[in-house]
Structures are given as C-alpha cells and as structure tokens.
Image (cartoon, rainbow, N blue to C red; front, side, top):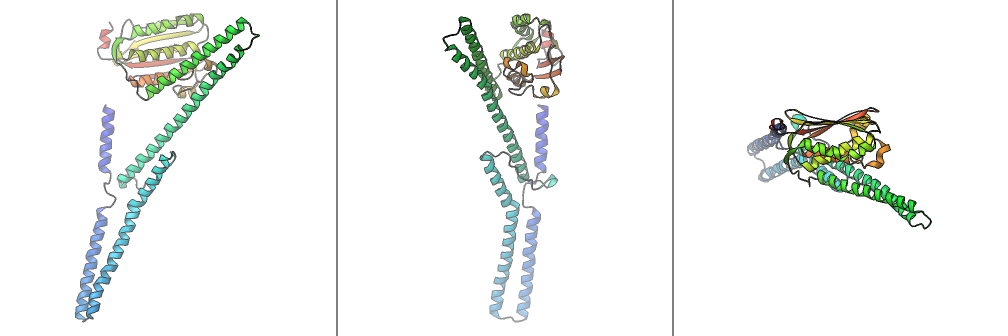
Length: 369
C-alpha cells in the first residue's frame, strides 16, 4: 500500500508539472502585440492621409485592403500553428491507433517534447507507446501459448492414434493388447491432466479463481501432502527427511496451497535419481512461514532458472514425458494471488532448493505453540 501511495503521489506531482495547454500564453501575447501594432500603423496612416488630403475613395479602400492583408496574414499564421501544434500530431496519433487496431503492435509515435516542455499530448503519446508495447507482449505470449498447447497435445494424440491402430490387428497376443491398452490409458490421463492444468492456469491468470481465505494448520497440510507421495519415493529408494513444526496457523486458500506443495514435491521426486535424498524444512519468523524443499537431483543451469516459471518450459528434456511444464507456472501464479513468493537455488548435478514464503498473521507465532 505504501508503494502504491508513493507511485500515486509521484504521478500527481508529474501531472502538476505537465503543461496543460499546447498554445502558450506567449502566443496570444504575440497576437495582441501584432494587432495593437497594426492598429497603431493604421491610425498613423489615417492621420497622414487626412493631412495629405488623399482621395476619399483611397481613404475608404485603404483600411479595407490593409486589414484584409492583416487578417489574411494572421489567419495563415494561425492555421500553420494549429496544424503544427495540434492537427499533425493528432493525425499521427490516429494513424498509429488505426495500425494497432489492425493488429500491428510494433508501431510507436515519436515524442514531441521532453523534460519540462512536456504537455498532455506528450503524456498521451507516452502512454500509447507503453500500451502498444504491452499489447505486443501479450500477443507474443498468446501466440507462444497456442503454439505450445498445440505441440503438447499433438504428441499424446498421435500416441493414442498409433496404439489404437495396433489394437485393431488380429495377430497380437493378449499381453501385447494389454500393454497397448495400458499405454493408451496412461497417455489419455496425461492429456486429461494437460487440459486440466491449462484450464486451471487460465482461471488463475484471469483471476477467475477467487482465493477462499481461511485459517488452518499449515504443518498438518504439509505432512499430508508429503505422505501422498510415499509410495513413489519408496519405489525409487529416495530418502525423505522432514523438519516441520508441530503447528502453525496461516490465513490462505488451503486448496490452492495444496496445489503448490504437490507440484514442488512432485518435481523434487521426479528429478531425484533413485537412492537420492529430499529434505523438507519448515520454519517461521515474524512475517513468513518458510518452506524449503531440497533435492539431490540433476540441478538446473542459470538459464533454466530464469525460465523455470514460464508456461511449458521444461529445462530437463529427459523428464519431459513426465509433465507438461505448467506446474511451476501455476505455483508462481497461486503464490502471487496469496501474497507469497517462491525462490529457487540450484547447482547442476548437485540439486535444487525451492523456497516458498507464505505471509502469516501476527498472532500465528504464539498460536503455533
């Protein structure tokens, strides 16, 4: 809230500094000065004409022609200033807006003024350029997302199709038929999980899911999630150590946080080789519950860490068949919604540590006892 207030104050100060008019008072002062000067010249010429006894017709026609020239000059000058100051920038603005509406998000409008000379039109141009840039980023993400979804779905569908065709053959044994059916079932389950995760992530990103915040014991939830994977880690011969407090109450959406623990634990087990070790350590300070899940798996490079929360990103291609690259993207989004955060430390060939921080109410530290 303090950051938002500072940003708002900064914006208000900037707005106050921005010039509110594209036609400065100096321009109108020039107009006034020119008109007064021309009026003085006119008066002087009239005095001369009267003293010189000019022809009456000349005395009548002269003011008409004189002020006609003055009015014409001022009109052309005004037209030029309006075109340069307002009309031309707005035409450029309209042209750029038309290109954006047609789907060209690469268009940018050049700034007219900078620094202290900025006016409201410069601010509009700046905001327009930022909007076009954001729309371009969103369009790129959407295109990549559709491309990745198509690619991820194409593979399991092809597998199901191929093994379904094999099942049609008459000269296959019962064991082969059973194996083909098992592969089709497993692939269909992976496809179902992919679609489900895409829908979940879409709801999370579009804030269709509103967190149902309630008070509950995080330690109980962690223990339950760890035990869900007991059969898998025992089958791989992985040693699991857990250092968890007896009780700590938090205020969060229990079902969403369960998704976080299940995804992080699942990844730790998936990337830990048989005979490896996973350590779950939970601690509490005055502001956060910290849950660290460490493994002795293959680890990640710095490049992989930079993209680990991107949709469909899978740094280790050797395990790509066991997931779809959406789990950590969902974890990141869930923690954003709940006001938490996740940090990653990893060393290639040595393992990774995922550190999840969950904000807790002030009374939770006393209640945990």
